[in-house]
Length: 84
Image (cartoon, rainbow, N blue to C red; front, side, top):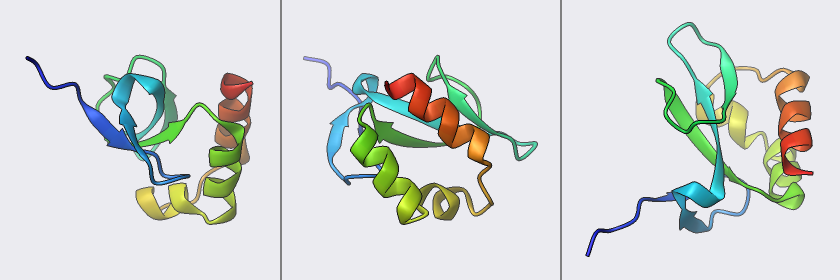
């Protein structure tokens, strides 16, 4: 039986199936994007499809620490729209 890929949510730190999470990626040019396909090149971070996890990640600056860069408010707004 094939093992399904799992990832950890940066908001709640729970391990979930990769397809249940939203991927945020930092590409080689340093751009931060919401990866709708889950296959974009670059460093990825995953977050639950849950507004509480997103707000917790924003409050604790988990995304900024994960990518070692400042995250623009437009990325957070795009994530909020995607979750709701």
